[in-house]
Image (cartoon, rainbow over all chains, first blue to last red; front, side, top):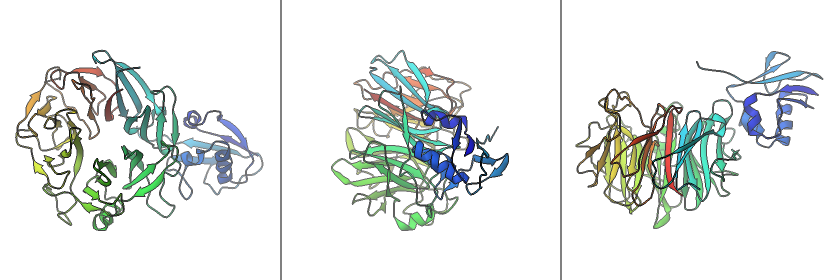
Length: 87
Length: 354
C-alpha cells in the first residue's frame, strides 16, 4: 500500500477525492491507474497519451524525483506535485 | 433567469455576466472552471461549454447546465493517438449541424455527439500541402491555437469552412472528407510556400441575415465576401490600421459590421484611444464609436474571440480586453460603459439573449 499525497488542484475536479489516499500499487503508474478506476478521468489530468506524466506534474517517491515506472516499496510515500512555474 | 448572458473566458477561469434586457446593470459571477485558462466559451440549448487548457492538468471541455452553478468536465476521447501529434489545447468551440465541435492545437477538430461527455476525432483539415506545413513542429503562430473556427453553410450541412491559425481558410464540400483552400483575395506580407494558403485570418463572422455574407479581420487587412468565402474583397480603407483581431456582425443588418483595429506591432488600441469602428455599408465607409470609451492613455488589446453581439432587437455589443475590462453597449455601439473590470486577461467574449 502506497501513501499518496495529491495536489490540491486535483480535488475540485473529482468530488470525493481526498488530498491523502492509500493505494495498493507497485509502481507510480499503478497508483494512477487505481485512482482512475475510482475517479474516472483522473489519469488524463496527470498524464498525456503514452502515458507520460504531464510536463508540470512531478512525482516524488520517498522524496526522490520519480516517474511512472518508479517502483514502490510497501508503505512508500508518493507525492504528486502540480509544479509552480513562472513568476 | 437573465435576459442576456455574456460568457467571458479569461486566463484564470470563466466569468458569467448577466443582465436584463435594459443591459445597464450587470451581475458578474465567477471565476468558474477552477481557474483554468479559458480560450473560448459558448452557450447552446441551456448549456455553457468552455474550452480550457490547464498547464498542470491538460485540456478539457467544461460544461454547466445551470448557468454556472455546477460544472463538470471531460476530455474523454479528446486526444491524438499515442504516436500522433500532441494536443496542447482546445481553442474554439462550435455547434455545427447540431454537433458540438472543438478546434484544437496541434491543428485538428474533434466532435461530440453527446453534449461534451465524450469526444472523437473528426478531421485534421486534410488539405495535404498545407497540412504538411501546419503540422510541422513549431510552425504555429504565437498562441498555438490550431483550428480556431468551423462553420457550415446553412443550405448544405456537408459544406463547412475551417480556419487554421496562421494558414488560412479551408472548405470541405463533403462533411470533412476533403478540403480545399478558400483564400482568394487575401493579402500576405510574408513569404508563402503557396499563394492559395498561408494567410493569417484572425476572425471570420457570418451575417446572421445572409449566410453568404462573411466579414473577416486578418493580419493584413479587413475583408468581406458575398459568396461564402469564395472570393474576398478588401475593406480596409478608412480604418487606422490594417491589423486587428475581433469582428462582430450586426445580428439584424447584413451590411453592418464592428471592428477594433489595433497597432500591429503591439496589438493594442491605436492611437492611444479605444475606438470601435462601425460600417453600415459593408465596409465601404467607417465611423468611430467612442461614446463612453477611454480616449486618452488607453493602450488596450482585444483578442480574436474577444467581441460579440447579443440578438435583441436593439443589439448589445460587447468586448473584453487582455487587461481584464469588459465594455458593453446596449444600443448597437452608440454608447458604451465598462461593465466589469479587474478581471484576468480576457481571451473570449460571447453574448446571448436567453
